Length: 95
Image (tube, rainbow, N blue to C red):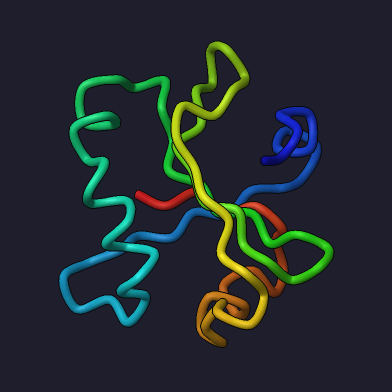
């Protein structure tokens, strides 16, 4: 997936998702893993826009520096609104 060092080397931005969020695929993937992050404050929902414009999405453990779950969305399937969220930051923390 991605190197944990890459995650900490970039400025982070935070994006809050709601029921009316247009980022359905990303939000649904996180919601399906809600039980992981609800009770563990060390876990973060993050997306990373890779150099090839693909999107790494995962649950990152801030204590271990590893991802506990994740997927890669091919560049052709990354919606424009998600690219816009990543315009100024490679890494976005979702809450």
